[in-house]
Length: 343
Length: 253
Image (cartoon, rainbow over all chains, first blue to last red; front, side, top):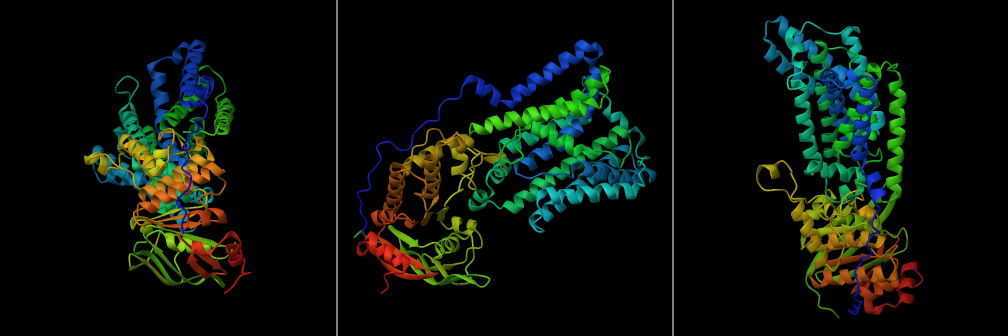
């Protein structure tokens, strides 16, 4: 016998969370703070050395920024899914080297610049994606935690790059490839414009599409994602393959800049990528992070590096400045978390 | 006695072993449409295992699961969800960083029409509105469907989780300890939502340690002990004392 007299609550659940103060709203908007910090840096460096405020310097900063933001965006997606990808830096070098071998062979066979570069970029992203696929397989099937899985591929990819090249860059590709990185519109070279477009595409898929929704859901609560019918393993595979793909693109970018594939390209860049992601407001615990934050984080890192050199400070100070920025960003993150809300 | 519909969900001789441990030992169960079935038992009685088999999270070692008289084999929770069997887990059924509407639609997102939809672009506005309407329909009012779940109180979160399950379930809804950690008023709301689901003709399985709640809303109670169904009887045959006695094994037939 069911009693049908369960009392209907007169107020359904409706306590509204207290409105956040204006100060907390500003603290909560990491992107706004980053924009202010970045503009302040530009003003500071320009006052100290007026030459800093020039199209030439801006062009160089953008050339540093483009490959960094590529791998940082891959890292961002991995971090939102509550993972970590330590292999991106090694993948940059490895894919650039393999791409360089392919382009060298094509060039010596008499293939023209454009088809050679097209094949080169395809080889780079294929190699990068393959590393990502290995990462995903180690995580999904060998049940390694992402830190260990990607540490394995970091070692393997960087070791293989050195073995295959005996430590020397692979040159003798299309000789005029380097002309591509010359500024084309203002300080923007063509490859940088491509990177800006890719950033926009990633923004759309991460913040407006199902791909991003699943990534946040898995990072926020993998159990809930699975219970909702999401194929978590398949999505994790997509996430790491995308990270590898972007690292492969970054490898090709370095190839263009150097006009060759160096095994040391991208060395240690995984830490810069993680720094850009954390400064950009993402949480390593997963579920939190924005493309705009990572883009600004990468801009701040590359601006600091160039700025310190131009004002004549030992560029090694960059590490100290970056460390301070990470500390501040992580502290803001902790404050927001203690308020219970995050986005 | 409430009118009962046909049997919609049935379990025949279901067993589940984890290595040498027999968690479920030949359980039988029939759930009718428009019925709330209480599933009770002490810790380790096999309730959670049975729920996991019913929701597709685990696969039984032997036995049959029938939905609408047809034998089904759930390989994943996705299979069960597709067939209209929704499960609300004890804790952690929601993604706290996502908004209320994103949680309601998790795994079933609406996409835009045309090529953008094929690429997975979300119809967010439509989902926000529908989430609000769906939660309203099952008797749950949540301040704003765009608010992230982390900003809600415990009771509100539970309400969203239940609202989501009820809104999507087309055949069966399984609620594992839905009134845990809730205050008296919020628990009352949850029980009310269960009755609304029943009135809509769903089969409801209610797992709880709170025996007064079980006695209050269920039509029938199944008692599990040591992996076996030891009692399956109309709720009217029990009071708190006899139910407790049956759960602990003090009362046997």
